[in-house]
Amino acid sequence: MAKSTINATQKKKRGRPPKPEGRRLSIPIAFPPEMVVAVDAYASAADVTRSEAVRRLVELGLKVKVRAR
Image (cartoon, rainbow, N blue to C red; front, side, top):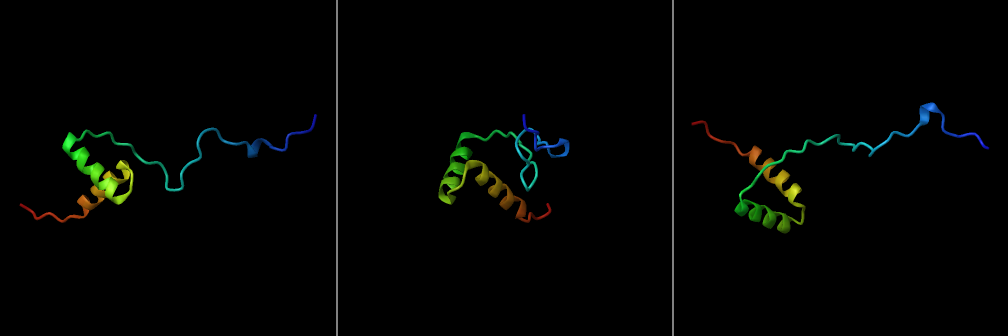
């Protein structure tokens, strides 16, 4: 039988390879039905997934400057 070409330092790791941008945190959130419809409409118009639409909308919301009360 032929020797294995993989030595102990070259063993493959198990599981899915890591993404270059690192791990993302999943945050479950509940939306009212009318907000889901609005997000889906935005996602459809922008030709992106619902998740990407929510990320974009949150990013836009965080950029808005709010006056102090």
